[in-house]
Image (tube, rainbow, N blue to C red; front, side, top):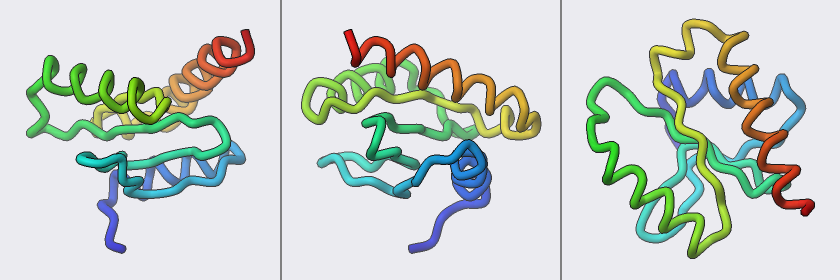
Length: 102
């Protein structure tokens, strides 16, 4: 499976944080860029072509409702600051891990 350079960077960040990442997880009729099975959390990279916020929200809601997977969206340009992306991911994981434990 070929992955994009930004997907590889995101995967490396997730692995550095200690997670096993599944790339291109199929959640019919969609694909999630990166998926962490143990957390049931997905990560989507939004590139410069990405302009459909309402479409993305509908897609993310569909995935949550039908597959129980919460999605964090990361803009590709954010990957220039790895520490900031790590912090964003950790905060997302902590917020959603607490929510799933309640």
